[in-house]
Image (cartoon, rainbow, N blue to C red; front, top):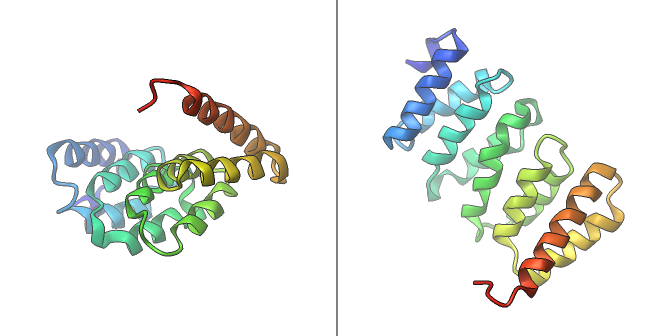
Length: 159
């Protein structure tokens, strides 16, 4: 159904309706096909968000496939963040670290790492990125995340 639509506004509305209605899991194969076509358009992020809502434990390979394809640009953001749900999968940390290097997914990958890594390891990764990453934008984001994480860890009521 969605694959035949040619108006991005309708695709975005349909993807949003599927997400809100709770049918994203059942529609995941169709949403993935639609995402592959529409990711480069304005509605790509909306379709990515619907995919995020539909991902389940058995969808790791699909999530990594969509999240790591640079041609999908920033539309991958919701999927990249949702990769954290697969925290026990081998190679996830490395996948997220590679996505930090992609300017379209840096912020989303750092968010995912924050959900996956223990605090001490996350602080070490953020310090290394803040000090050594070749991209000034990534260094700036990592410094801000490092500052925020240190502040949250020092707060007496954190929980």
